[in-house]
Length: 165
Image 1 (tube, rainbow, N blue to C red):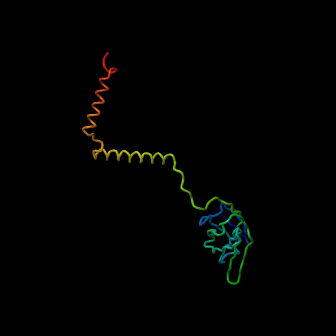
Image 2: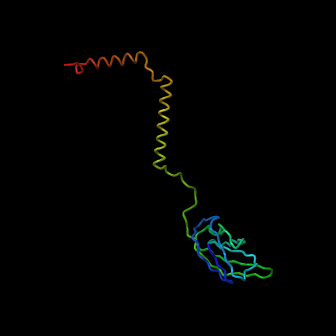
Image 3: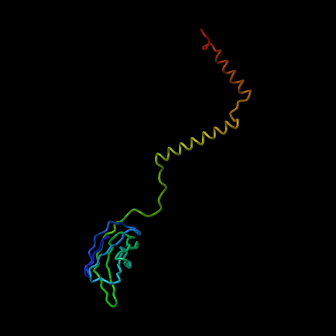
């Protein structure tokens, strides 16, 4: 945000910002020669009415988060001191629009890709379980099972519909 100070008038280029902005919006001031040698403090009045001063370093500062905490108008002014001399500016303001930020985010719905990866992982786990069972001999047939399977096969093979006619 650029702010020009000429004598005791402040000229503000309104920033593109929104409610809840923190440690982001930088105010950069340029001063006319009357301000040379002064210790400068910027004052930001938030929409809540609170006054939030910031000492300028190299004629810049980060706009206090408290001033941007609520939507509405934010006022800006500057004062400078040099010995017994105090110089101040008028107030200029800009609008801080509301935002939908804040609160606790919900767990996002999984994307299609995430769902596919989950299914691949489930399939891999099932395949490993089957492999483990096979290695452990859990699929080995008992002699009774083999005899019954052979008997069923022979009966089916000898049934009239399978014999050459």
